[in-house]
Every structure is written in structure tokens, then in C-alpha cells.
Amino acid sequence: MPRLLNQIDSSLSLYKPYSRINLFNHQIRGITLDQHLYSVVKKAIEISVITNKAFDITCKPLINLWNHQSTRNLTPTDQQIKNILNTIGSEHLIIKKDSLLKDNPLVQIDCDGIAQGYSVDQIAQLFKQKKVQDFIVELGGEVYASGHPPGKGAWNIAIQSQPSESLTNDSTTIKLSDFAITTSGRMSKFKKIGSKYYSHILNPNTGKPLQSKIISVTVIAKDAMTADALDNAL
Image 1 (cartoon, rainbow, N blue to C red):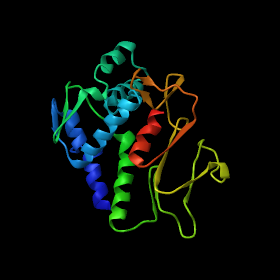
Image 2 (cartoon, rainbow, N blue to C red):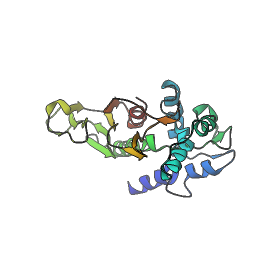
Image 3 (cartoon, rainbow, N blue to C red):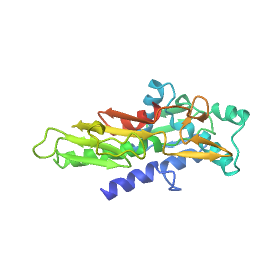
Image 4 (cartoon, helix red, strand yellow):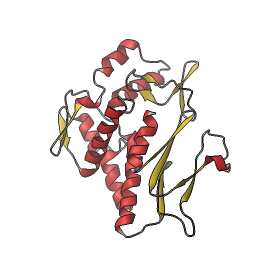
């Protein structure tokens, strides 16, 4: 399992200088895909289309802009955001045979919103290949539950709707078998710029932090990669 996770990390991690994703981000045209990056980008493009870009991995230039400006205690100007929005959208990515291409050299991708779910799916697949049927895989809050525990029909999964809320309440428990579940918190991560607090989640359509009264979103899907992406989009 450590070998598998290291392979995924070497493909999808923005913190490894020589990962496939970093190589793509620094290329003018594109790169040859490995299986991990291919699977994640293909699914990310599908999710971007069905959510009307509410989830889109090409948002990395926006993330860079907001991070850079926040270190100066400033928010980006509307013009800065407008300039970058021209490079945002899955339509700027082309999968051609075993290659991932970009139609603009400024296009960059960030798969952090889907990579953990993908890793969970890969670990689950590894267990199933070894004929293990009843198990739970969890990475960073992304969960896949297979089969059931002894003497029970399904796994009990506790959901935290607010950062301070106890998980002992029965209303926060879901029974799960052969499904994935993920939760994205809206209240736990904020960035303070000046006197205001901004969500860590950016809207790829507006280029600005998400504004929502929703405290958290929980998604149940057949695979963790889909659930992981959708909980960021909703």
C-alpha cells in the first residue's frame, strides 16, 4: 500500500517538484499521461461539465492569485481576476491518446479536490483484488465502505455537520455498504484579508471565494473520487 500511495503522490502531488502534475503545469503544450493522472483528469472534466464548472481543476491560477494577494493583505482586483478567468475551464484541456494537452500555456491544474477520493478508490480496489470484502478506507475524511462488519448489515458512518458538533448524536450517523461518502466543511477554513474572512473555496465561474450559508455538504456515491469532487461543487 505505501508503494501505491507513493506512485499516486508522484503523479498528483503539487508538493513534489517532479510529479506529473507539476510537469504539466510548467509545460507550454502538455505531457504524456500516466494512469493516475489520466483517470483523475478524465473524471474531473466530466464533473466540471455536469456541474457547469462549479468544480474545475483548472482553477490553480486563481488559487495562486488569491494566495499571492493575501500575503500582501490584499484581495485581487476585478481586472486581475478577469484576466485569469480566460484560462479557467475544462475546455482548455485536451486528452489525446496518452497525452494531456492545453490550448493556452497559462493553463494549470490542481487536483487536490479529487485526489484523496481517487486514492481511497485505489486502496479499496487493492483490497478487493486480494479478496478482502469487508473493510473501510478513510483518507482525509474521504471514506469508502465495503461490505459490512461482523453481525451487521452495514457500516455506521458518523457525519460532522459543524466543527464543534459532537458525533455521538444518532442523527449524524449513516449506514453504508459498498458506497463512498465525503463531507466538505464550509465553516472550518477561512482566510482573513484585511478585516474580512473569505472562504478557502473559490468559485471557478466568478474567480472569487464561495459565498454560501451552507455549513457543510455530504455526498454519497458509488466511488470516492466522484463524491470528493461533488462535495466541493455543491
